Amino acid sequence: MNAIEVSKIIGMLETNYKNFKVSNDEDALELWLKALKDLTYEECDMAVQRIIMEDVFPPVIATVRKAVAVIKTQIPTASDAWGEVERALVKYEANQDKKAIDSLSPLAGRVIGNMNWWGLKNSTNPATDRAHFLKMYTEIAENEKREEIMSPKLKIEQIEANKPKKLTEGEE
Image (tube, rainbow, N blue to C red; front, side, top):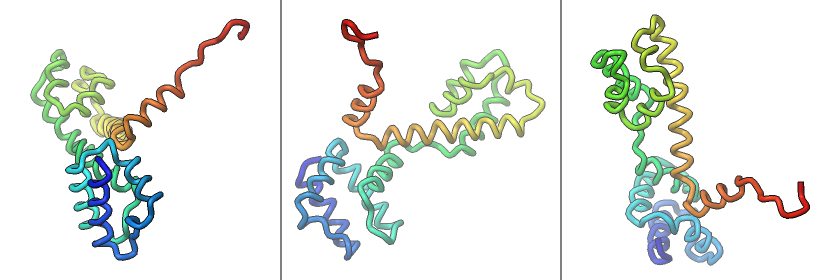
């Protein structure tokens, strides 16, 4: 987004939240621009409309980014994903793990890929299998949402910070 688009977003928020005053504060405007510049105006507009309908208090930048992430990712709920798995368990045989996983939503497929399809298919304890699936799915979904919230620049900085440092001559 550019400065004009961020100003429009701020204007929408100021109109709805009477105690939200950012447009007269250059530092605050610059912070909002810096934090939202990797998003599109359309994404932020939809997110702000959703926030205005749901929240009685004005949002912080993180709230807007989270709302955009929800709109962009549209991850099925854990229970809906388990329903997909149950349907696949009925439809596919134990040796058809590839077809079964391909029939699932991407995140559910990832979780089942980490589990054992043959073991699930032949399980005698579906309640435990469901509990393990729901826990894994929820963890991975939360990670996906966190990743979506982070700006690309911040992701790169985080990757760079976690890279092992090269030793220079004379260091051990």
